[in-house]
Length: 433
Image 1 (tube, rainbow, N blue to C red):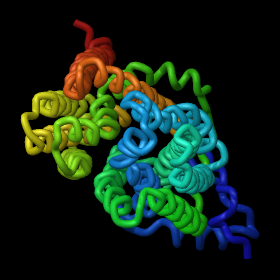
Image 2: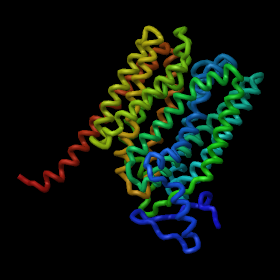
Image 3: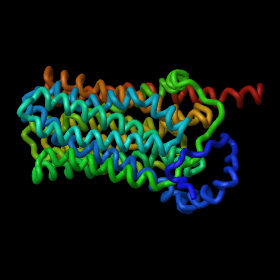
Image 4: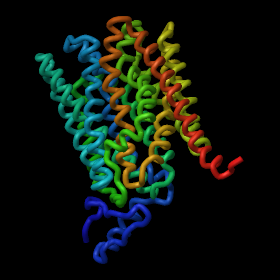
């Protein structure tokens, strides 16, 4: 009997699931029963665990890699920031392919490719740790590792979202996106101190080994979960989807600056201020992000995406201002926590509006296109913030990120007003004075 968990997913119309061939009917029923438990939360988390593993691998070196490049290899803050941010360039370049792959050949295959890339990224970081006697070569291998991790992040992130949405029959998109973020930043919150502990006790090289093991274990597990049907129907070109979601994406990119500067420069900021334990700032950011998602994600279902996004951007801007002005580590920790709380709902709140803008067969492309703007922000944030830090100091980095959030807030407000006007127009037309 054929193993459906490793086979190509069946294709279905947007409105109905086509019956399987007679010889495969019992296999499909068995695979569906095994992979779709009654609890919606278990359905979502059953595949969102791969997003968690992806960001666990992403986050393990975040608190120590900038210092490794700066102190061990002897490069400046701008080079360290660029080396970290090249991951987001890779994610950006692979987003269109990830969206097309998820829409055409299935979410499961997309996730599997991403997990293999994550494994490769860990192996390259392990190699870079053995090449410190040749700083330039070590830096090049680190860049290769970041590229592989970036490709993996793109494929796993897009694929796991589409996989979870398929397991929920296309319903509760806000809940799926919210849990995706909880897994993402939960992994970052756990991985930062874990990465510091691994590096301090076993050595930097073991970070790469741990990342490779994480990717390999994820691949092993994903192969044992049945795929979901691929939706067929009207499929927009990626360029058309990108243009359609661009206004929302720009607001997302500006709001993402807060996460970018915390993930990339919080370690060097703490070092410049002679504060200890920078990893706890990443943990505070991730923990408050999770609390925000758990406590307030229902507001998206109740009020739509725009109003929660506006409140979140305002909170994030305030947290970044607090970081910029922090007189000591305690205030900086509070600023990081407030920033995480604000950033919590920005992606799902705007993302729900984005998914509603495209036909069902192009949801993967819409998620990928929307995420492109996040990747652009991450790719630009590292070098730009590094240059600002060298010119004006690390406090300026957080002040500029706060200004970006304020601009995002203004843009989101304009989009909200336009949305309300367009929603009111049909009602006015049907009730002429």
